[in-house]
Image 1: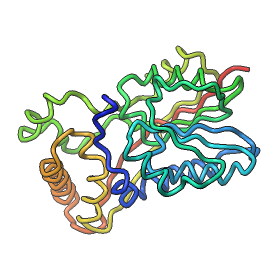
Image 2: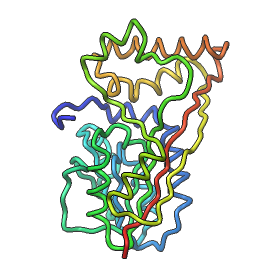
Image 3: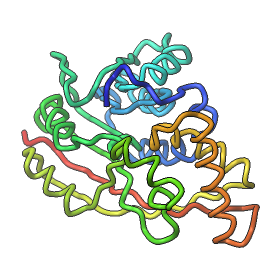
Length: 256
């Protein structure tokens, strides 16, 4: 996507993305770290996960990278004074630096990248020999109504082109092997998030629907309301609404 077209709202996303945050924090806490690593957070968003990782690296550093200027501005506004954290507005496919990293992580970003192979190749370049990568990518949708293919919305969305690029373990494995990674572990991760009411679900959806659809704000809001209505109808309740999904978790190393 053209860097000049930013369809994210960093401030709004920070306020309504706790489910993404909690999943990222859980992975950060599970990592075995020495505390002095240099880490790269690809698609750092509002910076909260970046900072959580930095707290586990008191003698190391974390660079947060994001294509969205709005996200980077929000991250810098909130965390710009933390000594071992820095943020850069750039594209992971073309990002270049002399610095090399012990660890690269990415949560909820790769499914927005059309050239995932290019992104993995550059991460491979940016890692030190023996460096690790942990990436979570949205998986292909399963069952349920797909509003993107509905008679109402498909004619409006098709001209905008594909904006969501889900992954499978098989394809992910093949890409990592092509890049030269070893110790590859790629698998599905199931997840369920419960939203207390329709407003909470709508607020979460609006964190990413404008980007995933490319629709103007009013139409994006209508699309999100249709998604909420579909979930309420399918589940037969307007409270404690569940959103079931899964991610592809990709873990690998750069050979020594």
